Length: 211
Image (cartoon, rainbow, N blue to C red; front, top):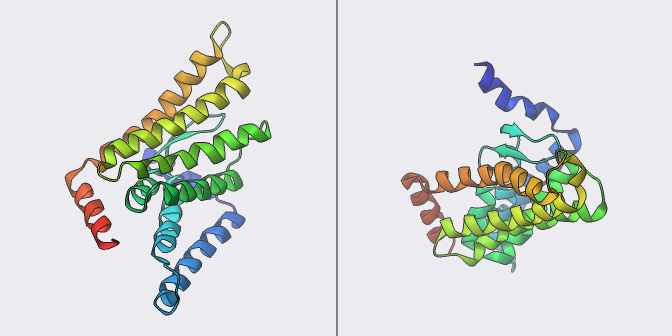
């Protein structure tokens, strides 16, 4: 019971500002859904994008493990963005990933340098959009997007987190070990869930519905 409670305790860390951002996202989606039929703009991608970013952000607070210097193993928080990119393509996925990264930066920042922020909070999450290049195979898309995120965070680790490496350990080895373990596990969870037959069926149905 205590373990289950610990998974959700991070929800208490969500700041009022972040709740406001999430509320604005949902409100924006509702407005677009209501007015979409009466405008000349194709709002479908925006509506789904807002919902996927919001769901991904909420899932990011169900943490199975949290690394002290940033990065967590979550309950498939990246999966909604991967699905979105798979359905709407890489450009849309890149934008959704970037939006998610900005939310993470607002809520739970670990800042050492402006370029580190770019690598860890912009480029790393934008890389999830790479899944959009594999619109016939979501599993490959998740792997590609995950590797993109890991590579960006790996560079950040080598450049900015070398001092955290144990004495005698190469910063390259340290960054590979940390990012491969934390982010790799997070992506693996997404991949395994996406391979569940019922989940895969829902994803494919959703993809067919929005065409």
